[in-house]
Length: 295
Ligand code: PAZ
Image 1: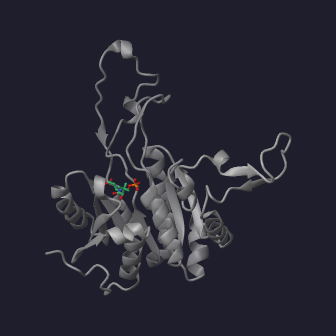
Image 2 (image 1 turned 45 degrees about the vertical axis):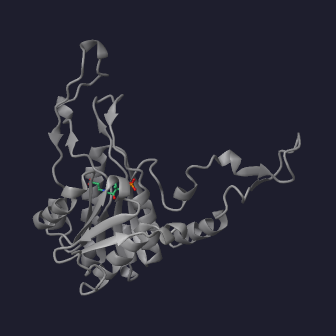
Image 3 (image 1 turned 180 degrees about the horizontal axis):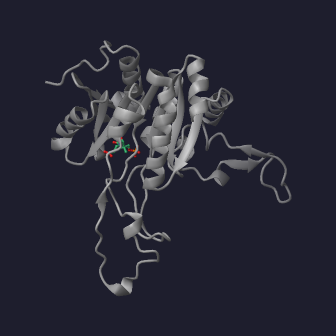
């Protein structure tokens, strides 16, 4: 991560670390069961593409098997339905395999972009599964990125567990149902934003995300996070409307980003708006990107 960051910073590029997907919290040390959450990784994966399009190099710290930039569009497609034998499926024809462009209509365009990105080494994927892997890798990433100072951005879209069972309190073997109903006592996960902003990467531009299901407490919680950690912005969203509506909160401003029906018809994604606003705020702190106050 440090080599990737220095390489791109020396080439005059900004580097963003995106976190994406949910964390897994094991209940046993030889893990059979774990707690998980809803996050698909779509926010992180699509934002990675828009950051690359805006001139950034991206460290993509993501949950194993969550959505991934470029391939995210094809996740629901059965690979074998998308391939066919050239010349048809006559018995004995096991010759060349080609892509059925009706099943994968955008594949050529996406493949071209993916290859350009790979060739320019603009995307560094790093995987986590468990909460402890995530915390360890985020700290390592922050320390690696601190070397490039204000050229680094953090875009913390992962849905990280607030609770965990410490290794010392975890049973080694599979919890037995014959012992009756399960009662769990979990500890609070330390708030990593605090050391990240204050100690590990104090010059970086940091955007955190806040998700709630009760819209009435969302903005208060976003503002409280900004007051506590003093970072640059919080993207606040509600579970059910997160694909089409977010509020970007900074210390002085608050802006709603909304997709209209027209946008949805044109396949505009809200991440494009978040990334464009974030980039102009970062590149020019006086920018009006997030200046629109909500009455
Ligand atoms: O991963 P996804 O696209 O399904 O969802 C994105 C999200 C809701 C996880 C993200 O926008 C977010 O709010 N992350 C922070 C969640 C939290 O409050 O911990």
